Amino acid sequence: MQYHHHGYVAHDPLIKDPAGTGIDRQEELPDEMDVLIVGAGPAGIIQAAQLTNFPNIHTRIIDSRPSRLEVGRADGLWARSCETFQAFGFYDRINAEAHRLVDVHFWGPKPDNPAEIMRGVRAEDPPSTVSEFPFIIVNQARVIDYYAEYAERGPAKIKPNYGYEFLSLETDESQEYPVSVKLLDPKGEERTVRAKYVVGCDGSRSKVRACTDIELQRDPSAHAWAVMDVLAESTFPDVRQKCGIQSDKDGSILLIPREGGFLVRYYVSLGNIDDSNRAELRATTWQEAAERANKILAPYTLDVKEVTWYSVYEVRHTVAKKFDDVPVDKVGSQNPRVFIAGDACHTHSAKAGQGMNVSMQDGWNLAWKLGQVLEGRSDASLLATYSAERQQIAEELIAFDKAWSGMMSKRPEELEDPQEIGRFYIDNAEFPNGFATQYPASPIIGESTHQDLAKGFQIGKALQSNLVRRVADTSPRELGHLFEPDGRWRLYAFADQEKTAVRELAEWLETSEDSPVRKFTPEGADINSVFDAKVIYQQPYTELELADVPSFFLPKMGPYQLTDREEVFAADPSADIFDLREIDRGGALVIQRPDMYVAHVLPLTAREEITKFFEQNMLPL
Image 1: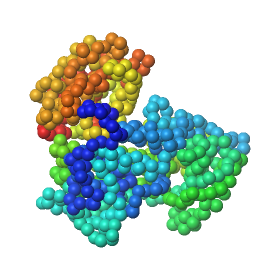
Image 2: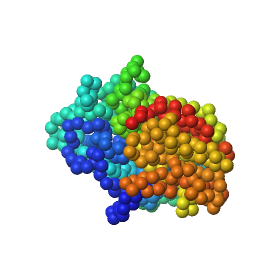
Image 3: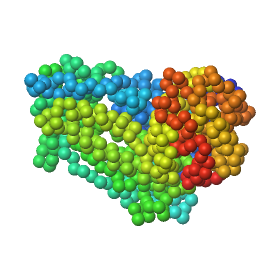
Image 4: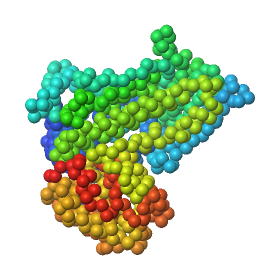
C-alpha cells in the first residue's frame, strides 16, 4: 500500500479519504442507485469491498437481518481465500485469530482388528506446490466483518443497510434505472427503489432468483449427516488435526478442529436417506450422534461436555443453469441486469468446505466487471462473462463434491484399499484449495498460443506468487502479494537477458497511440491509474540501477507527480522466478485481470496482439 504521496498521513492509512458517492454518503437507503446487492453474506460483502474502490458508482448492500451476523456456520477457508484476504489487506489479522491446519490425517480400520481404527495416510494440506497460503478455520461472521470494514474504510464508504427484506423486482429497459425493486423496510413498510443492476446473494432459497427465469438443476439427496460443534474430552490422538475417519461398520466422521483451542466440529454419517427413513434420521438427537461417533472412534472415546451447535442435514446438490436473467435464446443479443451469486447459484455438502470459498470468488468475479462497465471502461456485454465463467465452475464444484461425499460415505469393503480416500484427497488437492479454476478463452482471457513463454503462469488460472527482490530498497517481496483490489489490470514484464526487448515494449506502451495504456487511460489521470505495470529482471538487484530502467516502470503519480520506485524487481537467486515459473529467458509479458487471474501471456515483442486483446474488452475514455 502506497500513501504519503501528497503529504503526511496522520490517521490509519487503511482508512481512505471519501471520494465520489462516499462524500457525504447518506445512511438511509436512497430511491435510486447503480448497484443493489441483496444479501450481506460472503458473496455480497466481497462485492461491496471491491466496489468501494469505484467511488463514482453508487453501490448499496441490504440484508434482511437486523444487524451483522454474529455466528456463522461456515468456517473452512482454503488457500485461494487466504490469497484473496491478502489482496484485501487483512490476511495477517484474520490468520492471527484463526486455527491453522497443516496436515490432514485419514484413519481406517486396522487390518488385523477391523473393529478398531488406526491412522493411515498423512498429507500436507495444502501441498506446498499448490500455494504458500494455509488452510485456516475462522467463523464466517468474522470473514464478513473484515470485508465490511474494508468496504466502509474505502473511498465509497459502503455500509450494509440492515432490516430490508427483498420482495420482488421487475425490469423496464426504457428507464434510466431499469430494475424496480420492492422491499420491506425496517419498519415493515413496503418501499420501491430502482437500480441499474441487482445482484441476488440471498441464499439457497433466493427470492431474487425466483423473480427471474433461472432454473435449478437438482439431484436427490442420498446421505444424511449429523454435524455438531462440541466442547468435549476425547482420547482420540488427532483431535486437533483435520481428519477423515472411516470405521468398519459404523460409518465415518469428518473432524474439523475449530479456532480457540477447544471447540471441535464432528460431521457424523447417519447413512443413506430416502422417504422411508427421512423423518427418523432427521430426528436424530445430538446424544445419538455422539453415541455413533464413539462407535466410529473405537477404541478411542468422546465425552461431550457441551454442544454449541447441532444440526442434521441431507447432502443436496443444486446448480443454477445460468447466473443472470438473460433468457437462453437471447444470450449474446441481450445484456444482463439481474445476477445471482453464492448459495443462490449452487448448494452442496459441507464436507468439501467449498460454499463460502466459492461464493466469494463468484462475487469478486462479478464486482470488478460491474465497476468497469459502470465507469464506462467496458461495454455492458462484458457482464455476460460472469455467468459464462462461474456457472461452469459451479458444475465442476458439484462434480467434485459428489465424488468427495461419495468417497467419505463408502463402507470399507467398497474401497479399493484402505488408502483410497487419502489418495483421492491428495490427487485432487488443487481443486478444494481453489486453484483448479481455469477460465476458457473469451474477451478477457487470451488464447494459449504463447503459453510456453511462461508455463508457470497458466492462462485462465490464478497467478501464483513467487519471491523477488525490489530493486529500490533491495527488500524481498512476494510478487503476487503486491496485488490490490483496485480495479486495475496488471502488466508483469519479465525482462529479456539483454533488457532490449523490455525497454522497447516499455517505450511503446508509454508513448504509442496504439498502446492500450494510451488508448484506455483517461486524459489527465496518472499513467498507472488503469494499468499497473511492473518489470522483473533476470539479473540480481546488485547489478541493476534504477537510472537504467525505462520511465514507464517508474511512473509519476499523485498531486505532485512523484516517481514511484516500487515497480522494479529482480529475480532472487535463492528462488529464481524465471526458473520456478518456467519463464523463457527471452522474456514474456504476463497480463493479470482485476480479480488476480492470468488473462494472457505474450512475447515482449507483441504489439498488435496486446492492443487487440484490450480492444475486445475495454472502451476508450
